[in-house]
Image 1: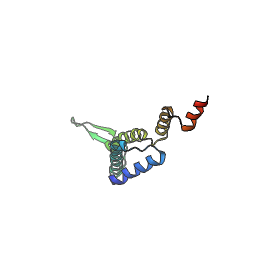
Image 2: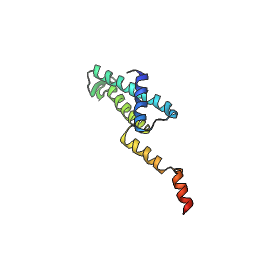
Image 3: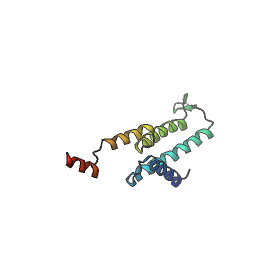
Image 4: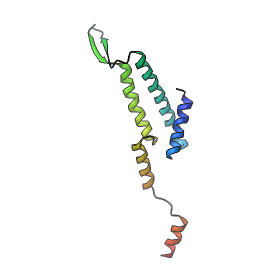
Amino acid sequence: MEFKKVKRDLIKKMKSVGTYDKSFDEIINLTANILIDLETAKQNFESSGSKMVVMHTNKNGSKNLVKNPFYLSIEKLRDDSILYLRELGLTPTGLKKIKNTIDLEPQEPSKLDSILAGLG
């Protein structure tokens, strides 16, 4: 995955749902990097045999089954990506939260509202 492409796709998606603002560029960059890291972790997991658990030998020489470190990183990166995508309004929950916040902000009265208020 290429950073510029991922960033461009995020911005395109944000514009399509009406949540893009230039001031979000830093979090967009972080999100793009997380998505790239997630894809890399998935590839590493697949190349390691896609095993959920692996044998680990600790410093005492004992062998234990542990979760595959590649899979652990995938889990963490998925959680992080969902969190950041939600903040950008790119999940149903995040979009709903943003839309509700916008609806709660006081709106300037339209010219028609001002005229009607002046008549009453």
